[in-house]
Length: 63
Image (cartoon, rainbow, N blue to C red; front, side):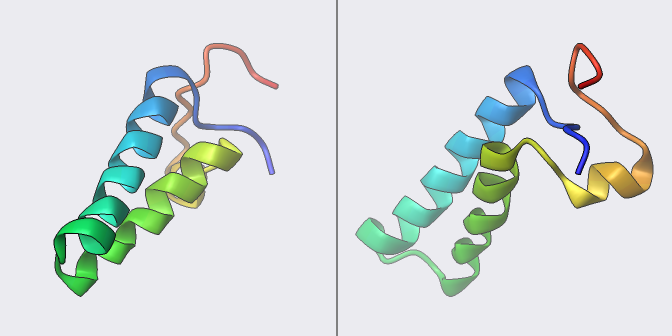
């Protein structure tokens, strides 16, 4: 796996994922909000399969 998520993109993914999951857990949000697991996971591991397929890389340097 080549790192393809970096910087601001990573932070936005983590915050959005946590927000969606908190919505479900603490405010009784809809079941679909569990999709927050996906952006959280991709933010934590710095790899997005969709970015790999589309050839997108938000990292400043290639690792």
